[in-house]
Amino acid sequence: LGAGALAGGIVLGVLESLGPDPSFSALAVAGAAALAVALMPRIAWLVVAAGLCGWLVSPEADRQGTALVLAAAAAPMPLLLPRAGLLWSVPILAPLLGTVALAPAFLGLAALAPTPWRRAGLGAAGFLWLALGELITGKELLFGVPDGALPRVEWEGSISAAASDALGPLLSGPALAPALVWAAFAALLPLVVRGRWLTVDLLGAGLWAAGLLVAHAALGDMLAATTVLDQARGAAAGAIAGGLMVVAVSQMAPPAEGWRPARAESVTTA
Image (cartoon, rainbow, N blue to C red; front, top):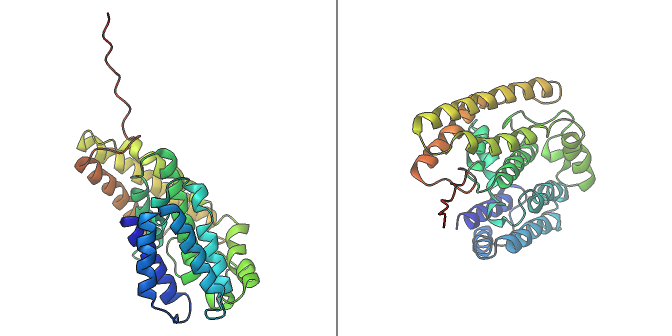
């Protein structure tokens, strides 16, 4: 149900904010999308993504450039999170957290995924959607848009303009380098917060948050000449929130697969 609700929310947001008022009920379409994704996560999600892009390129919407950016967000999901369709809408939470200066807290959510590869994939996808969200909204959600990227009004109606004035600056420089850092820290967090002793978990989360803060500071130095901000927005608060989130979950519920090493099986000699 959570996956469907997130997918429905994405559909509603796209229909109501990234194009003209549709000639159909956006709420009804979002509800249908939510139900379909809840029942058939991967197939329905891909169909919904294609449908949104199709509407954006239609004469009714005439937002071909926006469709290209949306496709750039959707296309990597089966590669970053293979066979994990229930997680494909989760990266939308990264830009949403960015609007309240808590974008790094998304890594706490990513760390709750059941395997290291899914945690890493979710972390990378979260930053990708965050970066694309900055292009679409023009807001500084973490480091801000890269140099050379123009406001959406300049490219939303043209695929070629979106490629050169939105995706081009994002892909041609180091603006996506933080995705690797997010992937690594999402995979690392469950290794230092294991759900056994609260004091040890708090210490581990604190060290993890400090490491993430240092990593964001280094990224800020690297990106200073190419992005709006030279310091990650909400770096400290987001890192602390992400660490505490995982500590709380690990204390309330058994850890997911991969959080604890398997116990050695007892062997009875004959």
